[in-house]
Image (tube, rainbow, N blue to C red):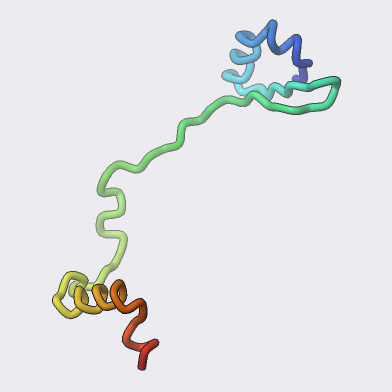
Length: 84
């Protein structure tokens, strides 16, 4: 459905109800569509731990050697292979 700006101001509550029921409401200014009212669908958020067991990572991610390499990247701005 398309309504003009003045009609949208006067009928906002009923237009919101129409959008809640799945109807797309287009608001026009001088017959030119400028905005749309649609039903809001909240994003689905995965619960904590949803990725558990789905991502592989190195078992030595927290080793002294890895930590030294990461620290070197921050302080020197490069990695071992690039500087070789």
